[in-house]
Image (cartoon, rainbow, N blue to C red; front, side):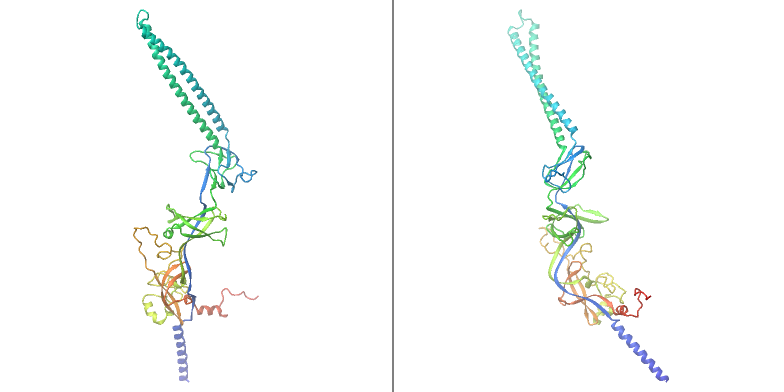
Amino acid sequence: MRKLLVLLILLIAGGGGGYWYFNREGGPGTLFRTAEVQRGDLMVTISATGTVEPEEVIDVGAQVLGKIQAFGKDPRDNGKVVDYGTPVEEGTVLAHIDDSLYAADVAQAAAALAVAEASVKRARADLEQLNARLLQAERNWKRAQELGPSRALSATDYESYEAAYETAKANVSVGQAAILQAERTVQQATATLERANTNLGYCTIRSPVKGVIIDRRVNIGQTVVASLNAPSLFLIAKDLRKMQVWAAVNEADIGNIFPGQAVSFTVDAYPGLEFHGEVGKIRLNATMTQNVVTYVVEINTDNSDGKLLPYLTANVRFEVARRQNVLMVPNAALRWSPAIEDMAPDVRPTLAGNGQGRGPRGEGRGIGGAGAATGGSEGGGRGGSAVPAPSGGEGRPPATAPAGRAGRRRAGSRPATQIARPTGRVWVRDGKYARPVTVHIGHTDGTMTEIESDRLVEGSEVIVGVQAKGAVESVNNPFAPQIFGPSRRQ
């Protein structure tokens, strides 16, 4: 009996050891989550946020001070006054400012002009009298010269006639100068009257262009004061059929933006509707907010249907590159790396020796060598080579020249250094193990990444994550404790 008991114990121990060994070698049953390699078109974009702006806006101000008395009439309906959204023509009256003070200035300037004109007439009449006196003095002086100093004409009278002649000539010059002074006074009064009339005309605010009023900033009875800066009364958009989107682009992405680039954008006012445009201008006056440098990019778009309204928020996508008929895998496939025990046995020595792979399932140790990342059973880190991060705030596309920009380099400039296409690693199922496949990485749209490989074709399955059998069994086991299970029967 004692030998039989010892034999039974050895059999039980051997069976338990064998069960442990085979389960340790095969793992607790790793379930790989896979995705198919796809073939299709890939578009690389840069995302940004912007504002819809009118292409040209005129700020109509006041050049005189006064109180707003009334608004102009709507050109479409004389029973209404101009207001928000009113289309106006060039010269349309927008508002009237109280002109009583300026009308008084006009009357005063007109009176001053009349006085100046009368002064001219008087100066001319005085000049005629002076010319007559000069003629008389000239004749007397000629007679005195004929007689000369003698018994008929004393020396005193002779000198008196000479002095009278010279005085008459000087008086004529004074009369001519008086006429010139009076004429200049007339010119000054005329300019003063024109200025007064101009200020009086400024009391009527008119539209300088044809457009649509998008903002009215005054009300009747409000006093406007024009000092160093003209107060703004109306904001007129010249042509709402052409709009612009002013998008703020991060400095990390501005190198992939160029004039003429295709752009698509959406606005929250029209969900599901996509608008299109192209880059018109990149403003060089960058702004910095919390150490983030951004550039304003102007995007031109057509608004013939009038759907886009000024100042809508736009979600912009700049088309950087478009790849057609290429192989693509999910980005998760490039980030994921298996535990060492899940690797094919023939690749374990090489990858384990280089620090590749994770430790025991769930520990999430990083993938060494090709790039620092966090692992975990869900493949949270980057695997193999660095994967191009998604665009639009999540990263930048690879440093390859985007399609459509080839040949845009200025003639004579030094070409930029081209960076070789990075390589990465995806994993495929090999029985119950995972086997690595090295691929060349291309562009990414943030979800899918372009790859090139001789071992992968359309429809091939790549691993994107794992799920342990034990976890599945614990969920499906009715005897397992349930933290959030059904409520107890009453």
